[in-house]
Image (cartoon, rainbow, N blue to C red):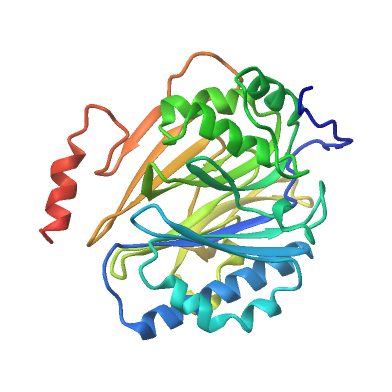
Length: 322
């Protein structure tokens, strides 16, 4: 007997932002305990903002370490419950290089059953999803390969089962076929135990953004800029914006101030690798048109999924502090 689950899921048109994603990537080096306390406070405020943005019913934090180990905290009650675990969060942060946060608004399966809460773990892959997909066809494909099947009643789980099966190390050439399987709305974050020092972020029709502080060796990410806590002190930038003037019946160009963050374009995947002294960021533009061809636009910043890039020498220099 097959394990395919039939769900009565209704997906509307356009963006379907049912959950919120957020977290942080840190350089792989020692920090004062007080700095971890500050990061813990900012993480908690980020989760509060994520929860308030959607009125959700579950919050999770996953801590990832350089050796591939991880620890997950799941709480199906309001985010203020996590404040009582502040000391635990500070302790878990010490030595962590990647933190994934997820605020859930359940559409498939109650959050009281923690297996329905993100992140989902399949083999080497630990990941979170914002959106809603049609998962039955994915499970059917995995069943042909002898997959054991879902452990939750959530559509999101199929994404990470597929990633572990076809792209366990999250290499972009392997990720593309999994993207071809996705029908619905999504933004995704994932970490592979095969490359535990690297966070993968993918913006589909749902958004993702990040702010990179090179001086602090830290990168904060979230679904939207409005979720970042004020305590991060992200600088502002000026941006020209066109708005429609209904009286003049024409577009008017104005200058506005907004947070100086990088917003991923639709189909963009970003790999963030934690080095000893700095973070390495690499961007790929994936094909979302369900095509079997793979022609990504590659923008390399020093670390590489580019098989021809000599990133190892760059990384060795980082280890030596050069």
